[in-house]
Structures are given as structure tokens and as C-alpha cells.
Image (cartoon, rainbow, N blue to C red; front, side, top):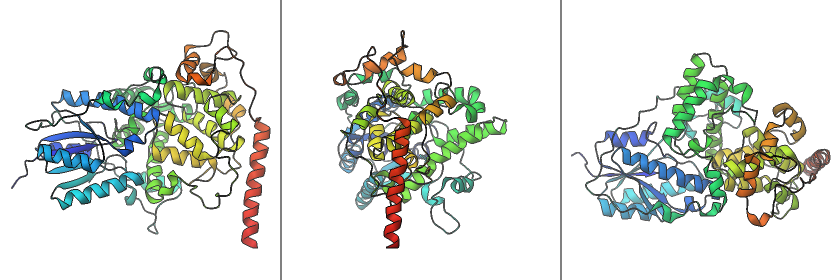
Amino acid sequence: MTDTRPILYWLRRDLRLADHPGLTAATASGRPVIPVFIHDQTVSALGAAPAFRLGLGLERFGATLGEIGSRLILRRGPALEVLQALIAETGAGSVWWTRDYTPQAIARDSAVKAALKQTGIEARSFGGALLFEPWTVETGAGGFYKVYTPFWRAVSQREVAVPDAAPARLRAPSSWPGSDALSDWRLDAPMRRGAAVVAAHQAPGEAAALERLDRFVETGIGGYAKCRDLPAGEGTSTLSDALSLGEIGPRTLWHRATEAARQGAAGAETWMKQLVWRDFAYHLMYHTPHLLSDNWRPGWEAFPWSTERTDPGFVAWTRGRTGIPLVDAAMREMYVTGRMHNRARMIAACYLTKHLMIHWKLGMDWFADCLTDWDPAANAMGWQWVAGCGPDAAPYFRIFNPETQGKKFDADGCYRKRWIAEGQTHPPETALAYFDAVPMHWGLRPDAAYPAPVVTLNMGRKRALAAYSDAFQREADGKLA
């Protein structure tokens, strides 16, 4: 007998209609579909900027669902309790969702699936967040990949399913359950006065993401390999926030890039490698979840990073006041826009972990609070890569010099001028906006003097290399003893 009971479609980081395998299957079932988003402990744990951006995405996706005759039901509480309550209210016979690969989400979803099945409720999960499920990519020996290049070679010729089109309608239930008001969740509250500044740089929703993709493929992907490292330019897709919330699917991006490559776009493969780099981060997080919290490589436990949030170097770094213009410009871009150019991220992270000798976990957590495009796997792997203790890492002795990086990637100083007001007679609005975004108790003013370096580049480099040499020589001596 055909099941006609509603399907509760539990949304997480998949706020889109197209390229959404689970939602496509729910639509094809012919059953009523009730889209649900749950404010559970994973949402409560979000930093200020990611929570703010989530709120914008939920608002936009709720409107999108309304356009196809559906609704977004919002509920707050432990996921299992919320789902059980909704099952009782709606008579739903199934709960479906897109997989999430963080350790916390896996534990939650496994418990939910087991509990629902015990009561006769179908619980079903789907792919769609990644190009390749983490357990499907194996080395010749049957293990997981620990280095990116062979991972890329293993997947680059694999077939990626063509994404499904957005459903024209979702069948509504005979009656809708009640929903929380999104405004009552106050997801923007932790941003305080910075919310208004950052909001001006956001374009939430699936339609906006697809427009950005079209623009990038038409005007940017051809020069991506050459222009992606220029922080003052427009050489990237700027889709990281949409991808992090699932407002656009990775298969959509992959197939557009593949078509661009067939048409001769020189930078298409380089961009495809970045999409696979994201998959690689999730591959490693799935197989080695300590990536999110501990040094991925053994032997780094005794490395003498500072772990104090009150360390003057860390305070200066967080405030964009290190006295190193390219580092400070990167931090200020983040406070104004919610994002930071990837080349600038590497430079800012390197200066913190190497020149300032601050633990990468402090930087990772700070980015998790301040980036609207925060992604748990990419953030953790990026920080450990720069620090030298992660998978496929840059050697610790590879220390980015912000001055030489500036000469190479910001030769005319445009990026630094865009974000640093001090010293400019007529600073641009972008630079002034930083002072409107940051906490007032920092006491910063655009007419104040620009600070001297907390640590000079030469001194910081020497100190970092000495610490590295000392730490690992002691480890070697211990093994020989």
C-alpha cells in the first residue's frame, strides 16, 4: 500500500531547491513535504557572523519556499524531541535529510535515525553536500587519502551526477504545523552594531548564488588561475558563503566548471581543484575528526605556541592593529564584509601562528566567530595547513613574508588602502566602515596613528624558526635516548 503520510524534510546546510537529491526524492514521492529547520545545539554553537548569515539565508529560503506553495517550519530544541513533536502533530511517516559530516552531526543523526526507526518512522539520509561521499574515495591499499594531489587524481575523472532542477511545486500537507518566528531567534544579536555594516555585503539565497555563478563563469573563470591571488581584484567567485550554507550545490559548480573547461576557459581546472580541496577537507574530517580540535600531525603537542587570548599579539591581531598593513587589511576586510580573500587569509594566519607564535586554535576559533562563510572542515584544515601541523601542510619553515607578498599580489597597495584608514587624508568608505563595525570598547578611531609592528617580520621569523628547531630537535633527542 502506498504511503501517503507527509515527509518531514529536515534542512540543515542545504537551503536550496535545485541540486538537492533528498528534496528531489521527496518531491518525486508524491507525498506532502514539510520543510523543517531546527535550532538545536549545532546552531547554538555557531559564532556571531555564521549565525547572522544563517538568519539571512533562512529568511530568503522561507520566501523561496512560499513561491512554490510551501513553507519553512522553524522549531527550537533538541532535534529528536522537535521531530517527534512534529510527527505527532502532522502524522508524518518519514524524516529525510541531507548528510552532515561533522562528528557532532554524525552522532546526532545516528541517534535520531535509531530512535525514529524504533517507533516505525522511516529515517533516510541523502548525499548532496559534497561531490564525493568521504567513504567512497580510497587509496589502492583501501585507506583514506592524507595528501591532496593523489586525492585529486583519484576523483578528477570520476563521474559527477548532473544536478536535478528545482521542483516547481512541493505538495503541501492538509494543514501546516505551527512555526517559530525567525525574528524571535535573534540570530543577528551577537553581531551587535556590526550587523548593519556586514549586511550591506551579503547576497543571501539560491537565486543570488546562481547569479554570482553566471557572472563568474562569464567574466572570471578564464582568468581565475592568474587572478585568484590578487586580493584587490575580482578574480574569485565569491560563492563561499552560499556554498557553506548549501544555497548552491557543489555538483552545480562542478558541471558549470566542466563546461567552461570544454570551452577553453584557462582557469576552469584550477577552480575545480578548489572544489575538490573542499571535498578533501571533509574527507579528512570524516576519517580523522580530531582535525577540528587537535594537531593533526603527531609530535606537535609540545610546540611552544601561546594559548592565551590576552596575549598582546593576539589582541592586536584580532583588532587589525598588528602594524603589518597586509595582515591588518585582511582582518579589517573580514569585519566589514564578513569574508576575507583567501590569499589574505593565509598571510594573516601565518603571521599569527609563526611571527606571533600564537596557537592556530585561537585563530581558527576567531575566524569561526567572524566569517560569514565559515565552514568547519575548511577552516580547520586551512589553519592547520598554514601552521604546519596539519594534513598536506606547508612546512613550518615556510613563513609568508607580508611585505614580499604585498609586492607580489598587491603591488599598487590598493587592497591595503581600501581597508586601512590611518594615514590617509581621505580614506575610502570601506576603510572607515571598519570603525563602525568593531566594538566601541576597542576605542579605535580613523584619525589615530597607525601602530608600529607588534613583532617585526625579521624578528618574528627568527623566533619562529628557532622554536621549531628547538622543539623538534628535542623530540629527536628523546627518541634516540
